[in-house]
Structure formats: structure tokens, C-alpha cells
Image: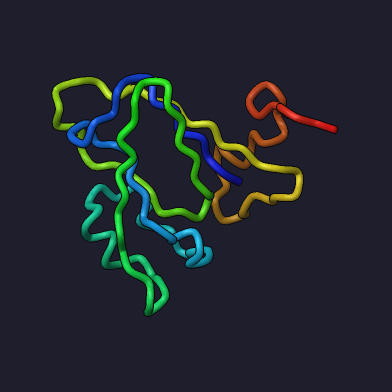
Length: 126
């Protein structure tokens, strides 16, 4: 699975741009992603397991309106607060192939609706 994040407005550094941890998709699946909804990103960076040789390098995705950013499902990502006084409008599309299986541990709305073509349509088929 991967995500396409689309900026509908200009996203400058003070707008709380999507921020990615470089190379984190190579760290493997975190079996206990309890930090997902935490808001203290600095504290999260200390608690997320990673290989001994891995560095925590954040890369902010500043973007122009209409730009798209793609990231792997295992990439650690998030955004800091928007302190610009301007709106940061965006949307995300989560895309997967027929070869990917949802994790049973996630459950809830996401997994329950994967087979609903109105909510999760097939956008390409051979």
C-alpha cells in the first residue's frame, strides 16, 4: 500500500507540512503502533523502534498547490502544527494492489470497508 498526499493550498514550512522520516520504510513493520495518534513528535522519535544504525532524519514536504507526494505505507510520517495563520488544505488517497492484505490488528472502519466498491473502488484492472 502507498499513499498519495495532495496539497490543495500552498504548504510552506510554517504551515505544518507533511514530514517524513528518511529511510524509515526500510525499518520493517512496527508491531505496536500505539504512538499513531500522539501529538508530541519529538517524544515519538525517541520511542519508535529502529535499527541501531538508523538515524532519525525528518524531511518536510513543502509543496505548491496541486502538488502530490507519495509515500510507502511503512514510512513514518506526520505533521507539526500549522502556525502560519493560513489554512492547509489537502487530501490523501491510500492505494493498494490485490496482493496486499490488511493487518487484522488495525480493524475498525478501514478494514471493514475495503470490499465496498463505493468507498474503496478498483481504479485499475487488467
